[in-house]
Each structure stands twice: as C-alpha cells, then as structure tokens.
Image (tube, rainbow, N blue to C red; front, top):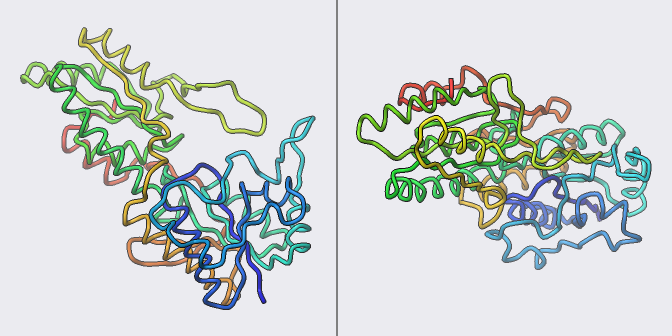
Amino acid sequence: MTRIAVMTGGGDAPGLNAALRAVALAAYGRGWECVGLRASFNGLLERAGTDGLLPLPPDAVQGILDTGGTMLGTTNHGDPFRWPGPDGTVDRSDDVLAACARLGIAALVMIGGDGTMRIAAGLSRKGLRVVGVPKTIDGDVQGAGSTLGFASAVAYATEAIDRLHCSAQSHERAMVVEVMGRYAGWIALHAGLAGGAHAILLPEIPFDLEAVARLLAERDARNRPHDVVVVAEGAHALRGSVFVADPVVPGRSERLGGVGAHVARQLELLTGKESRAVVLGHLLRGGSPVAADRIAALRMGEAAVRALAEGRHGVMMTLHGDVPGEMPLVEVRTWQVPADHPLLATARALGVCLGE
C-alpha cells in the first residue's frame, strides 16, 4: 500500500482541518494510507519512531470540516534547512528525506504559506515527492489565487470594522484598526473596502498622516465627525520603517506590531480628535472557516492527491475563481499589492484615503 504524509506549516488559519480531511479521504479512496506529521517537521525530526505521526483513516478526520486551527499542530519556525541549533541554525533537510524513507512515506503534501512552499521546493530539488497546498490568511502567495484562510480572515475583519463604526459614531472619535498581513496589505485592503473604512494604510504605500488628518478634518466639516482607519501591521510612514513588537530571534521572523497605536496617537495630536486603536491580531486566525475557504480546501486537498496519483509532484495547487490548476514550486513568491491593482483604483475613486 502507498503511504503518503500531510503536514501543516506556518501560522494557523481557518480551513486547515478541511484540507487535511480532503487529503486523507482522497488518499483512502485510492487505497492509500495517509499519516499526518505532528507540529510540522517536528514530527519527523524531534520525535522518536512513529510518535511524530498521526494516522489519518477516514474516522480520524470526521467532524473537522468546520473547525479552526489544525489537528496536527503547526509552527512558523520549523524550516529543516535552517533548523535551530545550539550555535545558530543547521541544515537538517537530509534528515527529513532519511526519515521519510525509513517510515515508508512515498510523498508529502505540504499545506502552508510562501515560506512553507519555499521549503517544499527545496525538498523537491533534493528528490522528495512533494505537492503544496497554499495556506495563509495574508493572501500573499503569488500565483495561488485562493489561499486557505484569507476569506475567513477578511470576513472577520470586516465584521469587526462594522462594529467599530458604531462605537466611532456614538463617541464622534476616530477608530484605528490594525490587522495582520505582515508585509502585504491584502487583508487591510479587502476588509477596509468591505467595511467602509475612510482610510486604509498599506505596507505597499508609505503613508503621510498629514493626508489622513486632512481627510478627518474634511469629514468634520461635512458633519461626519466619526472615522475608521484600517492599518496593515506592516504599514510604515514615509522615510520610516515597520514597527517591530519584539526583538528579532535567530531563526524566526520578526514580530510586527504597534503601528495602529502609533497612528492613533499621531492622529489625535494632529486633529485634536479622540482616537483609539484596536488590534485584531490573532483573532483573524481563529474560528470556523467560511464556506469559500472550506470549498477551496476540499478542492485543493483532493487535487494534491490526484496530482501524486498521476505522477506529478514539485508543484503547488492553485485555484483562481472556480478554475483549478497548479504551478511549479520553484516559481512561488511572496505577493504584495501591486501599484496598478484595480482595488486601489476603486478605493481612490470612492474617496478612501490611502495615506498618499
């Protein structure tokens, strides 16, 4: 019997369990055995024997379609090419291949964001049969189309913005909403537009808070004394830098945070208007996936198994609208909001300030 493994890497996101369910059921339907790697590559590199593996027969994945998180666990600092060691990082990619051979794992389905896809490409070059499924609430995997978790994160952020409009209007104040996304502004742009924000600040467009302050003054003059400003966590001022919440730890990505509070303080100084900051943070990662994320997870998870069955690997599944596809893992890149994106034109045409 063919045995394949599936893992989740990077941050958690709504839709991961739905994708695991799809991979496991599709494998079972072909007469294959499917096992999950616990906590990304920790299941292979840090746990003896089979303790790091979770068998995934059909009964094990029932009732998880609508659940958040990942039943396998995950980590965003488990790159086998840069594995944490006592004196820095070490390359343990050969250990991954050896463990797969020892455990009879013929292929690996890797569910994750751009970082996980880069690891997948590296393992593919070393000879492991790998297929990727794009996951990230940030929506920043170039070429993927749908990324699992993005639709759910945008839906939650939009609902939060809707609620904050009520508070802003009641108190005639400015509410600044900081959302995740790292160095890409997709969540802020989509949720900001969907939630009727008056200003949206993105990493891709360094902001001038004088421009935002002018907008607030103009709204006051039109008897619109409440304002909602959405800020991506990676946004920064002209001639400024991103706000880092914690010191950089070797082997881990820097933790962004603080720009929302900064924007609120500065707007209050510039306008004299009471301003408050709200950080949605990891709330965007949790909870039940919306229908769009569930369908995308099922389609791409099943497609990953089908690709392996048809002899294709070294690829990432894609889903553009209702059109499935795949692309080479070596071509996967991080995708920021391009300067000519139609949603930016829409925002400007509707009078939304982008801090320009």
